[in-house]
Length: 182
Image (tube, rainbow, N blue to C red):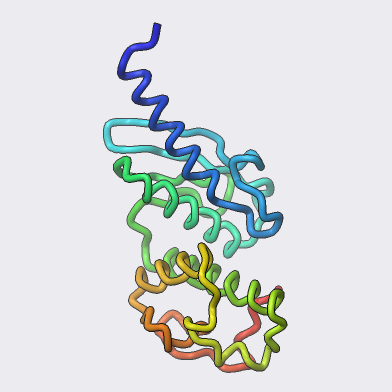
């Protein structure tokens, strides 16, 4: 027989898994829960600790930052207390609820690249025009929401007329520095 505490912990784990199921690997467009990226979910008095493990330890930093940031956002939205993301066997070992500036900037860069890459692939926007895109030009959806959230986290404008392709200090990138596609 399960005690009420066990049921509560199981319920929190289910809630975290449900939240993580909304996070996809941008390269294969499948939920990270289906790809085995979620190693464990530990519930304690302060919140949850989620251990993620990417399929390869050598994944690019932008990929790692993007997946971890998306996972952190999804679990944080579940409002279950402090969220600790731990990226096992990777260069970024601990990612806490309060992201430091360097991590937040890299997460913004990854989200920016993902949004622009999607627009280029979907609408065929030429590379020479990328530096002119505004937030208004991005289609609505989770990618744009994530980009706006990351812009806010580093103090960048979220005005619809703001340029999409900007440096961490908000300066617009020029055409020669705006290629988001690897």
